[in-house]
Image (cartoon, rainbow, N blue to C red; front, side, top):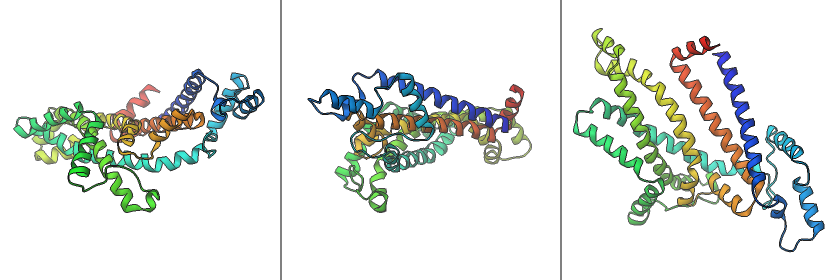
Amino acid sequence: MLAYLLRRTLILVASLFVAAVVLFVLLRLLPGDPANALLGVGATDEQIAAARAQVGSDQPLYAQFLSFVGNLARLDLGTSFVSRAPVLGEIANRMAVTLPLTLFGFLLALLLAIPLGVLAAVRSNKWYGAAISVLSQLGIAIPVFWVGILLVTLFAINLRWLPSGGFPLKGWADFGAAITGMILPALTIGLVMAASLLRYVRAATLDVLGSDFLRTARALGASFPEALLRHGLRNGAVPVISILGIELASTFLGAVVIERVFSLPGLGSMLLLAIQQRDYPNVQGVLFISTLLVLLIGFAADIAQRLIDPRLRGRGRAAT
């Protein structure tokens, strides 16, 4: 397991380096000079030269790349062209909205998808088992922003139980208002994500129900619920965990849509604003941190799979 952790850590570092290269190249392919974001219309040649020296675009590409990678290694993401604030601090402020939103939606999806997926598999020959499967397919087909609009129409406009969007200026210091503002966005994410996860939980449970080890446990005297809980769910969790990692990463990246629908000042809103303002340090900072989090989620999912299933650890030793 230690050798596998070391190997996966090296892969993680190499992936981050490749992501940094891709990010550097893509930003340099954008039209115009980053220094133009610092200047107004009618800037003189001296002002343009000073701005290029300030952002480093007057240096050769290899020097820019070495400086870029060195700064990333120190988690120095630079200073915003617009606000003049450190990019890392601004990202931390926005993550205080995006991370809770993603995690609340993810937990809600788990609470819905796991029991309903198992029920849909165990009672697949019943009408309610088929109904759960149909509803999950319907949930996958509906775009996430439509779910958000429907929830706003129902709970904010018609019933007036919850706010339609926004986040308190004091942030989490105003805890009650912050939680209230998170309910509809998190519910939107949770419902859409649960519809997708439910299919995989159902499929994994159906595989377990037809397995030899479950029939053996039943033959040795275990009841069906006991055999399913003690033997089936652990084996069925292995393929589901990899899907959970993918879904969590996609939910984090897709939070920009939800933040737009509910006017939340999260990481996605920061990225869109930075692109509009051509604020290159903010753009590259958000993209790098997003990539880092997605890779860490995949890393955690791989480790969790091997902790649950010892056969995967044995496979890793055989490979080495």
